[in-house]
Structure formats: structure tokens, C-alpha cells
Length: 98
Image (tube, rainbow, N blue to C red; front, side):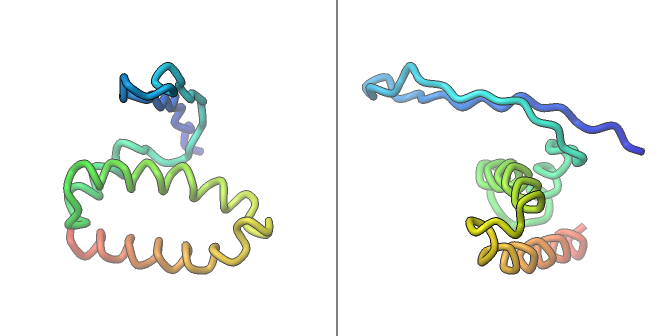
């Protein structure tokens, strides 16, 4: 079995004028997927710019596993079928562009 990948996610407000500028969010997570490899695949094959590819790759790996774990939860139940279709289409596009 593959070793899980361990990540520390940190979000900081960089707007010095904001009253929230001192706030940060930080958490650690494990993922079966290599988030850096996913971002690189998106950069190479999605047609999105580098910044957007990074944001989308990270967002998908944060949302996807959380939704899979609780897919019957009322928060996710309506969105899950659409997310599944989106992921299948994205994977197909990336495979065809590699």
C-alpha cells in the first residue's frame, strides 16, 4: 500500500490594511494523492494558467476527499453527482492532453 502524503496547509491574510491581516488558518492533512503532482498535471494539460492550476489542484484535493467521506451529508448530497462528473471529465481531458 502506498504511503500517504502529509501536508501542512497555511493561509495568511496579506492585506496589511485589513483588520484580519494578523489572522492565519493552518491545518495538517494526509492524502493518498501527491498534491504537487496533481498541480503539475493541471499546469501541463488543463489549459489553465499556472496560478489557476495551482488553486484548482489544491482545492480539488481539499474538497474531494472530504466530500467522499461524507457524501451522504446534506451539505454534499446534491453536489456530489456533479463533482463526480466534473472529476471524470477533468481526468479524461488531462489524459488526452498528456
